[in-house]
Image 1 (cartoon, rainbow, N blue to C red):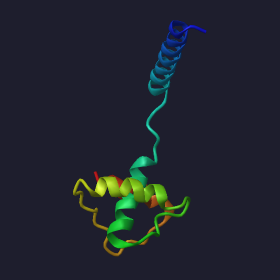
Image 2 (tube, helix red, strand yellow; image 1 turned 90 degrees about the vertical axis):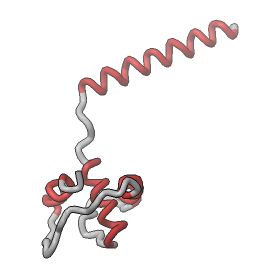
Image 3 (cartoon, one colour; image 1 turned 180 degrees about the vertical axis):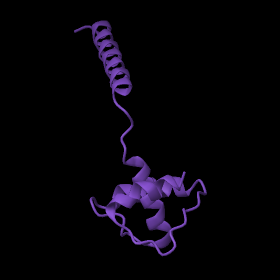
Image 4 (cartoon, rainbow, N blue to C red; image 1 turned 45 degrees about the vertical axis):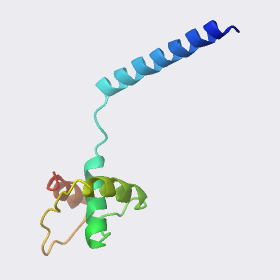
Length: 96
């Protein structure tokens, strides 16, 4: 295969990938748990409290939390809160 044909194939593949990504982005909403993962990660880094992470390992929340924490956000108030799994989303919205 000539270099020109290889380049055309590469460009065609990239354009097809771009078109598929745009279509998928328009057809699907943002993944819903990023809000929770970032806020839980910030909470874990700030307080060491990992009670809100019950359904996955803490690596991704910690990575997200470290990035968000670097922006200087403040944790929402949670004085005397008794946590359960369903409260994570409500609490996470307070971070933003």
